Amino acid sequence: MGATMTATSKFQELIDSIEELSLDEQELLLEIIHKRIIDQKRSKLEERIAEARESYRKGEVRRGTVADLMKVLDE
Image (tube, rainbow, N blue to C red; front, side, top):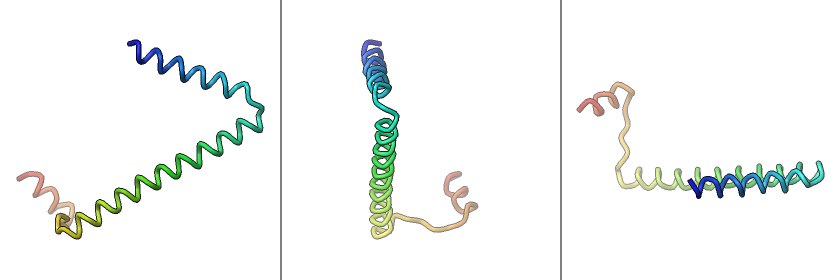
């Protein structure tokens, strides 16, 4: 429970610090965070695409219909 309280306390401190910023600074911070989140999601997607391509290259990918997939899952 101590770690949760510490994380909560740090988060609250962060919120308090943000509230001390001007409205323009808060908007700029929000824009920066939004762009960073987009970049992180893009990077994660690029990793998943690379993994999928590698699986396809190795022949580890199957093609078929939903019915085919259900048959495999039932086996």
